[in-house]
Length: 479
Image (cartoon, rainbow, N blue to C red; front, side, top):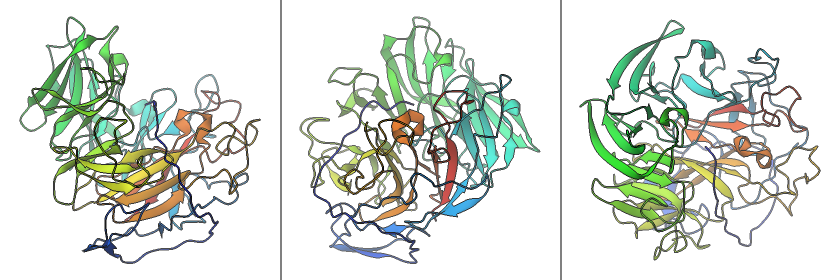
């Protein structure tokens, strides 16, 4: 799913290069949430287990060593990030896996940050490829369900069941299906056929709900308007429906972003948050919360966001918010453009999560029991360091051109109380959208998955299915 915009904050930063790993064993934090980029809060003491690897944020720039020569290991094997100390496992190898009939090679990715590719038992990963196919691998990198054995599904994406690690859901035609994995194969059963629609889709980029009992879908009406709705898997009924004014040309089944819809997500309390394709103050513009009666304005100028609960159990959304995104909001971070954690039911109330960040994607499946958000960073400067070495616009990383947090995978505690820097994604993100890491966290916070083209610093092989796309999927055990 393509990014449309990113916000940046600028400031004076202390720059240094630090090599070496650090594993933290425990963390007691005192401080005022969001005081600075990853500052430790002064006013309350909270004991929350930290990640099993990574470095607490020191507010300094860290350049990845061996940028032009690093080579990741084979599929299923791991390396230790030389700066932050987390072990990173490679799950795919686009250079050797899945040759198409024309001899071309596929690139692999986990798709997007706001739905988890990892199943409920942290044993399997959904993996997407450049030809639109899905397959399932174990976290050891071995194939569980090959692409040819996956069920046929509409465009969009499947989502894992929350309690059962062997179950996922997908849409085909106008029917929602439940797929069960057993013995290297998939058995599908019908959950519900929506006869009132010409077709349905599980669109960018909603996950199964926080409570595991609801799924967000889009149905196409006879007049080509769309019903954006929440389906309860337990009650077998719609719990919320928004009918669009805009219409779609063609079939909803063929696109993950139908008509005026750019992104759809469920809030922690099972309401629809809709990011429309156009920014602005209008009815079907910006990011809106459908409360069952009204489209409540969350953002008129949109950016990447995700949803969940805060430590007190209140529904929140994470994004960059200020008077430029929605008047008269104020950003709680010093730079004025930081990522904040904002109360869904009182959007004037927010705490600073991270300040001075580069372009980002955020992933959160959390609450008090899992209070960590995964954030990954990328840059598309041209000229710049996040290009293939052979690109005429490539510049070697230096203290002059590498930004704070650039290219990193981090965990941020949802109250703004702690930042842990896990690894560099080492991806040449400026080569194209799919080269951005888009890190996604598992529901239980145990794992983080990201995409990178780090295996090809000199550029993609000539026989790739999509030129200049040679990405692979990587896994970090965070807790």
